[in-house]
Image (cartoon, rainbow, N blue to C red; front, side, top):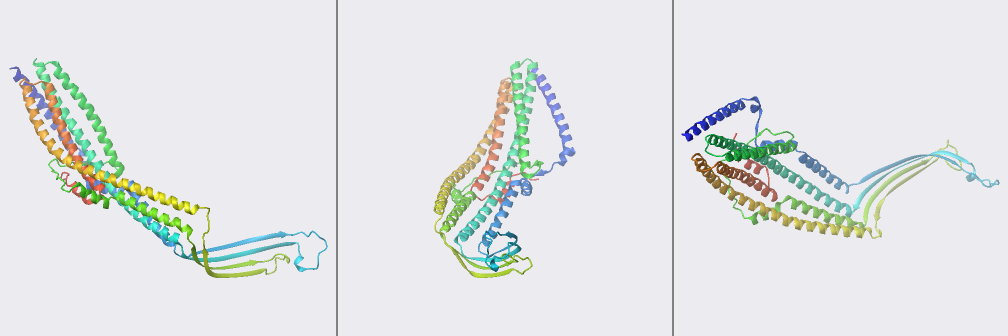
Length: 470
């Protein structure tokens, strides 16, 4: 008789809760705010990031600036023309220390006020300059390095937007799971209160359920805060807060990677952009060694020049009305400059460049080993995630059956409320583990493609297929 009363009271509470939930859901469905939220998938978010990401814009400007270095390098082999001009006003005065001077025109006059004009043009064409050749080789490698850095930044953008997208989805799913768990605890609390009122259980079960609800509420608050931060991370990349993100399709099945880890490592050694950039840095260091060694080599230039000079006066005549003296000079020839000794500076700078190149070679060796380790890590992580998903799915099915049997035992008086709450927690943990494993599988796949230098928009399209259709 008591059990029937308890069941009637509980059913009435459940009906009221479902009625309120339906009312609030209907209000939300027809709210203009809900309609204003546009569902955004991963590709749409990436396109917004392409237009607004500051890091990508910075890399583009850097790449355009590096292209100008090629023109600067070519200018080292082209002729240069320089022009100079000058104008002077001379005010001179001389004093004779003897009063008896011979009758000589050169000694006549004590003051001279006159103007001097001078201008010239020089044309220089390099014939042999090994330093310019080494500098041009270095510039070509620098532009190649800049191109690789731009591609790497684009790949990093794919990684960053994917990471922010799926971390936001995971945070949203965690909020929903906490909400569902809290609702389940509240339902169990209602059952416990009904049995307590009937005198079938002690107050301990009620206190346990209330404590559990308070803890879940605290975790839910933390999850909501995390979700807000993840949305702000997307805003940093795209320039605006995202709308409603398209969730991951719960029915999607992942495929196991058949390639061996060594195959991925071979691809990484050939295509990893960090490694390619480091190789370009070594080439630049080699060109720098050649450039510094050129300090021992002569330079040969063809030179042609023309100069004009006009003095309108001066001693001994001192008159500003005469025509002055005009001089002309034209020259054409070859200029050879041979360095002899610079105090050991050139040899020291060469040794410095050789040591810096050796450092870069050691950095490359370490980077190669580090990349190999990362590839193996991501490869094994994907295999682990694939196995985890299957295991957690089985665990979830088992925990659902366990929860059902525990709830039935509670209704029959064979189980207490604490055991029901524990069974609910096991089911919740299994669902959360499945979600995390699915998102980890996707991100480890992206990390693997990034580490081998093959992450592209095609991979983003493939991953976008994992999302629910609009």
